[in-house]
Amino acid sequence: MVRQTILRRHGWRVALVLGLLAGPFGLSLALGQRGNEKHIEPGVSALDPGEINKPDKDGESKLWVLDFRFKPLRTIKVNIPGRGERVCLYLWYQVINKTGKPRTVVPNIVLVDALRGKVYPDEILPSVQKAIADIEDPDHVTRKADDWRNIRNSVTILREPIPPQLPNAVPRPITGVAIWCEPEEPTDKDDAETRKLKLEQMERQPRLADLTSFSICISGLSNGIAESDDPSGQKKVLRRKTLQLNFLRKGDATLWRDRDVRYEGHEWIYRASLSLDK
Image (cartoon, rainbow, N blue to C red; front, side, top):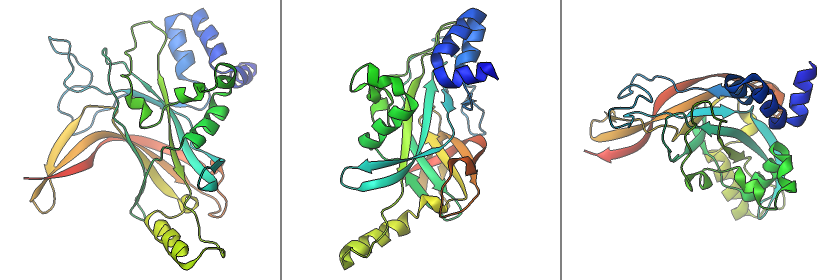
């Protein structure tokens, strides 16, 4: 109990000390099992073109897959320039490269509400990203003003390859965040055109607070690609190896409480990303 309290208060510093005391395997455990974070290792899919992270004679892997670590989904209220105060949902994550070579992540992170057939792409919102960094990495304010940018988004994570983790070395994860914001609901002050636009937006992407069963799909953690025909047989469908995180939410639809969201497990799937004419 005391050890857990210390880890919650002092985070990675204590984990690092504990790991050094326990040796390289203890270090990996201390850094990889913090609090209620989940660590997902590469998994097999039926459409995989080969063995995962198995190098050939030239040292290249036909199929490479990165490790993924994430915290429970959380909400934050932020005053967004041009939008006003909004409630946003976010997924804090880390990517770890155990493939032996640098890998560039080209992510596509979407929240999928299969029950209503709705897809929510993650948003690039620097003001929200900074507010999240203040919570998830509060020490950044004592380092330098723009250090919050060390938490990447789906664009900035492209700037440099994910470095490989060397045997018995300190893990070098890249930290990122995916963000989804509640749509702006119509008010009595809106004119007819503004009200129409807001209602159309809510039709495309209903309130996050109404979610019950949903998934978050993360593509870009692998170079796995599969090709298949679409139902009409007229087009080819390209599918990317994708990590799907499944969630179940209970509670009052009018009040989103983070504790009402439960992680239900994950799947490695091949998700359609592009259709091409034959």
